[in-house]
Image 1 (cartoon, one colour):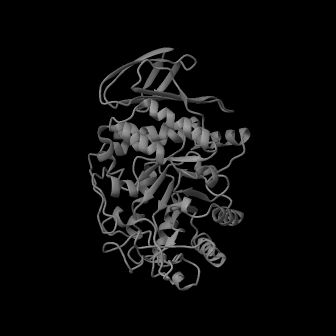
Image 2 (tube, rainbow, N blue to C red):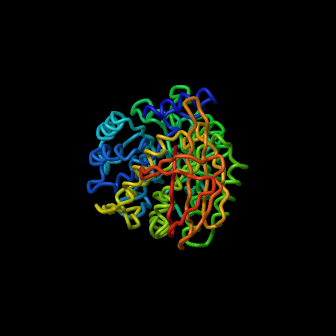
Image 3 (cartoon, helix red, strand yellow):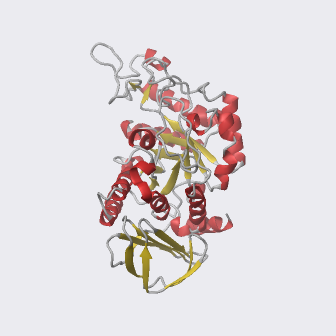
Length: 441
């Protein structure tokens, strides 16, 4: 990691760091504790940590692990996001000691661990529902739900006592347990002024904590001071549609242009091809993207932002995981894409041009004579020499011939697979369906 350390040093000389230093070259992994192992416990998940570290994962995002409500519970085991008590561990996953042992093991391996935080609502049988004014109620005094989330009750942020209790609970996990930050569920549904107040308070004690907001519509205001990273939902949806032949390369570039004009440049976009919602409700990445899965997995690494990997992606899980029941991920020993993720994580860590804003380089379009080809460069000069990464991707299900104008970027490069390659100012490629090439120097 010496190269990454030098690159971060270079970045501090060029711009004030907005995020924790360790986040700039990181990859985040969403841990679905229930489905990751046959046991579905933290003790069992702990055994996965060395392999995750070997694959180049840096941040573990743990889905909610507090006790789940029983009133109007969905399914047998219920939703992680229907929390009955904030400062406790769901016995399904083990004990507090088990979680603390998992956390200590993760920290010893160099991971940072953030907890999925549900601030928008509680379970209807939470003790908090006994406090007058802490939840929304209808004209008959009944607790109110949102959407079709019939197993939750929405919290009322007009109540200052509730706000203080929420912050106190977040402090408990930071102060007593020692996590490194939060992924905040439906963050845009909670008033931004609460997040600014709560995260500001936490940052006074934990200036290097990391925060992720599940939101894109309010990303600009949420990342002003409260959050480091937001969800790249719109880019994710465009990727799905390109893979399905409904959209093309121009739609990709239009999405970047819109984000560049509406979201602050130092905000980190989380790039992903799957997560717990997408997998369970809209299908696996293989259902949604088919043969384009490897290409878009790589795409998440070469465009600005931080790549995210969901439980099962490294092992080739090919089925939709039940959300309210025990449903173990598939493991395919012959799955080749797991090795690609390891190389992609190494690529990200070795190339400062791929770091998250404001340490990384902007994405610049490379002129190409074929509109089915996504071609881009990220180049950054630095104190320790320049760094250039070039991506050429066939975003179609047909073989394509393309010639790129690489004027100014000619020279010797190394491919993702490790082979050396010389690129000319007018460089031609023949790319098979959904084939991609990544060059770096």
